[in-house]
Every structure is written in C-alpha cells, then in structure tokens.
Amino acid sequence: DAGVTQSPTHLIKTRGQHVTLRCSPISGHKSVSWYQQVLGQGPQFIFQYYEKEERGRGNFPDRFSARQFPNYSSELNVNALLLGDSALYLCASSLEGRRWETQYFGPGTRLLVL
Amino acid sequence: EDKVVQSPLSLVVHEGDTVTLNCSYEVTNFRSLLWYKQEKKAPTFLFMLTSSGIEKKSGRLSSILDKKELFSILNITATQTGDSAIYLCAVEAEDAGGTSYGKLTFGQGTILTVHP
Image (cartoon, rainbow over all chains, first blue to last red; front, side, top):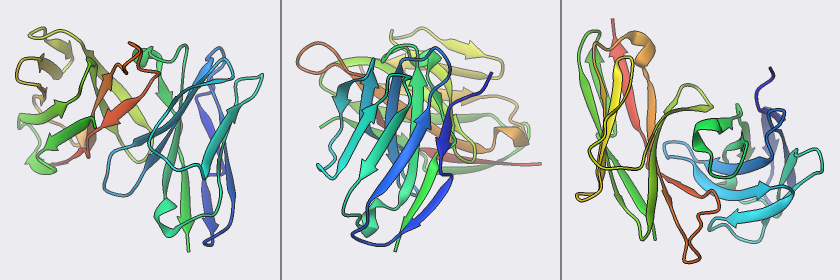
C-alpha cells in the first residue's frame, strides 16, 4: 500500500512569492493534518481537515490556508513568503482526526525561502 | 498556551546502553501524550499514553505517564545503532468545547546518537 505522499519534495522560493504544497493521504484515510517543522524544533500544528472541512487551526497567520478535496487529498497554500517560512512541511493522514495510532506522516516538503 | 519540554536535547551513547528520555508538559485539558521516532523526515508513531502508571511496551522500548507530576519517560534498553533518531513527545489537549480537533503540541525533540 502506498503511504502518504507529498509534492514537491524540495522547493526554493523568494520572499513575497506564493507556494502550494500537496498531500495525498493513505487510501481510506479521511483526515489530513499539516505541520511546520523548523530546523531543530518539533513539528508545529497548522491545520487539520476531516471530510473536507477544517476541524482545527494552529497559531499561524492568515497567509497560511489549506483545503481538502473530494478525494481527500489536500493543499497547503502560503502567501507572501517570509524567510521564517523556511521549514519542512509535514502532512499526516489518519482514519479520523484523533486516531493517533492510525496517523501516518508523509516524507515532507522542504521549503527554502531566500 | 500549551507547552511541551523534552530533555535532554541530545544524547550520545554506545550500543548496549540504556537511555531514558524525558518529556514534561503544561496543558489546560490534557487528553493524551504521544511518542514518535523521527528518522530523516517522517515521524513514526511509537506510543500513546492516556492513563498514569500504565507502562506501554514494544520490544526494547517502553514508556510511562505520570499525570500528577505532568511528565512521561521513554526508555530504550540495549540500544542499537538503528535507534539513532530524534524522539518527539507530543500532547493532545481538549479545547474549551471539549474536543481537540487533532491538534498536537510537540516538544523540541531529543536527538539520540548510538555509536557502535
């Protein structure tokens, strides 16, 4: 079975640009969560979507937005990029939002903002 | 604001040693504590703890939660080079509405290096 997939794997952008990161969950998983992991720190929760609805949001500015599609894949959008947005962006999918033992993380997208 | 602190931040041991990793937390409405192992990129689930004093065990790894003192430990016995990784502790807390909406608050992680 395919695990959680994310694209692209690496990305370089300049300040002020916009970026879209994509995540495909494990087949049958209806919940997708996004995390930002800055180098040397633990992941920080950005959003959770379940059945195409936003169920949770972390302490991130409105420049960060996301959506979930009917096939349960998800996109994370970040506008007006700042240097501090450079991080590993992790997507995790699970059967439901709080079934942690069934939650699997993808390999992440490494974003570098210059 | 929910807070999770892990110690030590890094640890270097030799194969066969036993290590203890610590995680303390401050959250308003605790629901569960989770441990993950992160090698390279994707964290992988190790344990979920919800009750005090009940040890969870998987092979050479074990973990226990103390809800009174607000901490958890992760023990690894007879360490192997394959145990080298970042170990992350995360806490799930309920919001004011009684749900958590899948929000996990992570600690900064402990970098474990096991030398042959």
